[in-house]
Length: 382
Image 1: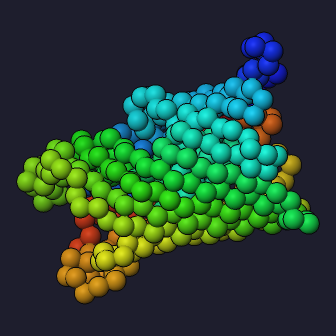
Image 2: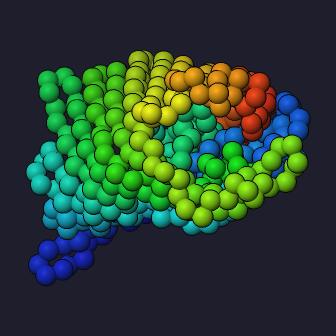
């Protein structure tokens, strides 16, 4: 994985050590069937592979490579207790635009404690830090019902602590910051493929705790923030098949408080693998809550690893507000069958069949319906 390892340059009697790596995923996929129609300006059947980036497979585009393909590089420079880390990624889902994912400095206070400041991943999920590195994932794409929200990164400060307590390894991360996402890919899913909606998360605070012993690992997450959006050019109207410009809002919506709770339990016992992950987002004072989970089991047989995973998202009504009665709420579930083959320690081939079933209320819009998708990926780190 290392591009440069152990390269040191003299600097005032100290040495700066540089290291770097790269990663890529070449993916292709095709919709095999599902519910037909024009949804959010996409010709469906459609499968949303990446909510955060707006990565959508749709029947109208035939064989597609953009939603799951990406390439990136990351590197760090270390001098004594100081370090700087950066990562950039270009994604097909974002038309190949290069995005700065990480750029942060760190200071090692002790062997167990480090403070970092800058731009980092928001640790909402187990695979947040490696979500673009296909070799590190058991799937061709992350299960979309769980891994898909407005914000992926944040700008701020965090305190990272690691220690050993008997047979248990523990890591604790506390963070604070904010994030603004221009032309959110997430909102293109809901407001239309040509929509431009900005999303803002302010006053982000929280943290995650991981505990590992032998073949078992668990992880707890709590994050809270204020969230706002700004719709710049309207929302796709499924009735008129045009963009409704009356919904344009030149300013951000009022801030809504949200509280995010997450739990992961993961095992790797002999050749059996399991992964269970759950998230709940509460918005005090709002009319709905979000829930999502994934549950997967896999088996290693030499270089082969078959796996079956189910993932589900559903919204829940919390008041009698007529706009959020059960018939107006979103819900969907996917079952994925994945076969992974390790070509080497740094490259893999994967094939995956996703079957998604829509479980939204009868009045929910946009309703993407059911879909069936086949994807193939080649992943490599270098």
